Structures are given as structure tokens and as C-alpha cells.
Image (cartoon, rainbow, N blue to C red; front, side, top):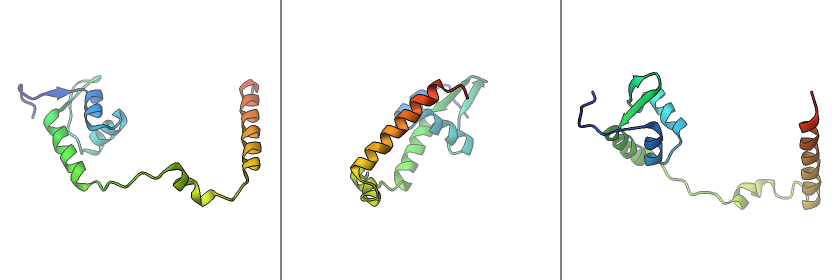
Length: 105
């Protein structure tokens, strides 16, 4: 239950505080992971205390994985096509994109 002394935040403020997107906040609300207070169909607020609890829970259960570099992500595909074939493929895709802009169908 919300008390008068509770600090209430907007969805955008909560997302910025937790460093997630607004869509993630809405998903957590829908899943029941994050309680919210709805004042009207367009006004939704979140208690800072609830966000702190979720952040603490998220920090304890979330396992940080090191970010892969682009080279590591592309390594399985290296050698499948040559640089020239890749450039040709890129040109074909770009031509097709330009053609589709003016195509009425």
C-alpha cells in the first residue's frame, strides 16, 4: 500500500534508474515482479522502495557475462564468403532496397 511519504517515480524515471528500457519496466509490471500504482488509465507510478528491492534481487541473481567483441561473434562465419563476395552481396541488397522504395507493390 502506498503511503504519503513514499517517493513515487514515473516509468521513464524508473527505467533510467535501473538502466533498462521502459518496455522492460512494463513487462516486469505485467509479470508481477514490480508492483505499481495506477492513478488513471494514463498515469502509472512506481515506489522507489520497490525499485530498490528489485535492483537488489536483480543484482544477486543475475550472472554477468562478459560482452563478446564483434570479431568473436563473427568468428563462426569467417571463411564462408570472401570479402569480394560480401561486398557484392551488400551492393545487391542496397540496390534491392532502393528499388523497393519506388515499387508500388
